[in-house]
Length: 457
Image (cartoon, rainbow, N blue to C red; front, top):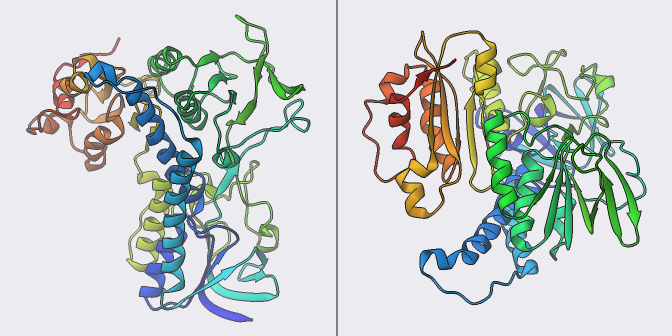
C-alpha cells in the first residue's frame, strides 16, 4: 500500500493544475492517467478541432480572395498536411502536460486504469494507493446512441474523425448542435458534400430561434444541406455507402453518405471506476453527483470537469480546479452556482454566448430591455468583408443588470468577453457606456447597442 496525501484520477484540464497547487502546499500527490495526458481539450477537442477550423477558414478565405482584390490559382486541399498540423498541435500540448507532471516535485505519475476498492483506496494493476483526499477528473466521450442499424455500419465520432487524412466524398452529420456544426462547416470548406440531420425542429435548439435561423442561413449558403425534424433516424449500408433515414416532414428521402459522423452528445467516463465500492453517487446518465463546492456524497472525494455534469467545457473544468483549490487551500467558500455560464460555438462566424438567452429571460416574467445590432452595421465586419450575423443583449429593465448576450459574428468569441466581464462584476450596464472603446473593433459597438435598447414586448 502506497500512501499519499491526495490522489488525482485523470490528467485533464483540472487534474494537472490541482496537482501543482497541492504539491506547492507541501502535499504528496499521486496522479493517475489511463491514456493520454491533457484530456479531451488537448487530444480530441478544442486544440485539434480549432486547428482544423483554422485550416478550413484559410481555404474559405482563399476561395474568396477575389473579393479582396487578390487573384490566386485554383485552391487545393492537402488533407494529410492539414491533419499533420492538427496532430502536431495536440502532440506538443500533450507532451508539455506530461513533462510538467513528471518533473513536478512531490507528484508521482502512474499510467493505468484506476478503480476504487474503498473510499480511500485506489488500485492500478498490482499497485494499491491510499489517500484521505481523492479527486476524480476522468472527463467524457462521445455518446453513441442505440439507434436502428448502429451495429451494422461504420461511423465516426469526434475522436475517430480526427484520424481521417482524406476528405470524405459526402459526410452526413447526425446532430445539428455545437460539435456537429463545427465539423459540418469545416469539411464542407475542405471540399466534401455535407448533410446535417437534426432531430429537433431547428439547429442548436438550446439557442434563441433567431440565432438558429441565422446559423442555418450561413451554412446553407455554403452548400450544406440541413435536414431538421428528423423523427426517425436510422442507419443502414448501401454498397460502400451508408444511408441515414430521416423522415423529415418536408423531405422523407434518405441521406446517402460515404461517411457518417455521430454528434449527438457526450457521456462521462465513470462506469468502470468502481464508484460503487467507494459509495459515490451518480445520476441516471452516469454523471457523478456533486454539491456546489464539487464534493461528492462521500467525504474526502471530489469530482471535477466533464464527469460531474456541471459543465462541458475546458474553461468550466479549469474553474472547477480553481473552486476546489480556493476552498481547500485558501480558506474560501466558492461555489459552482456563482459561475456565469459562457461558451462559444466555433462555426464561422463564431457565436459567443454569456448568461441567459432571450427566451430564458422572457420566462422569468421580469421587464426586459433588448438591444440588437446586425454585423452589417459594424465597421470592423464591413472592412473585413464578413458581415454575417448580429449581436444581441438582454437587460433587466428594473435593476439595469445585463442578463445575457450573444454575438454571432466575426470576432464574436472574443468580443463577448467585454460583456462577460460586466456580468461577472455585477455592475449596471450604464457603466459600460462610459468606456471609450478602441476603433475599429467589434467591441466598440456594444455600448452603442446598449444605448439603443428597447423594452421587450
